Length: 90
Image 1 (tube, helix red, strand yellow):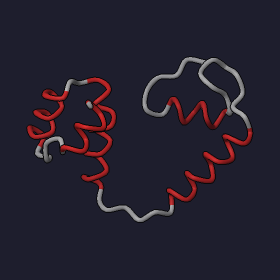
Image 2 (cartoon, helix red, strand yellow):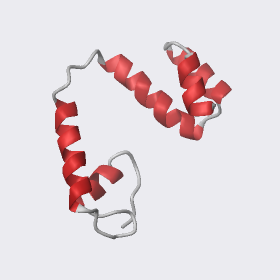
Image 3 (cartoon, one colour):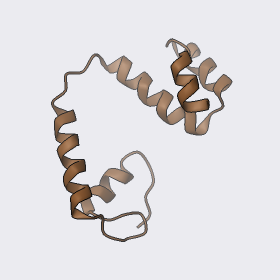
């Protein structure tokens, strides 16, 4: 199974298989689905905040700290916070 893009992992989970094609254990799927159901009920604080959080979380995997900080600021968001730098780049 070739997984790419932001929805690829979700498709694999829905199919119940890992990236190598092996089945995901039922207990893991059950816990994952339970937690995601709880998360789906959590009130949101705003789309822009959620977008920024996703950009930071994913951007830190692909961009160095200075680039991500500059890009966030250039887009009109707050730059990287100290706790984000410590977590993603520390």
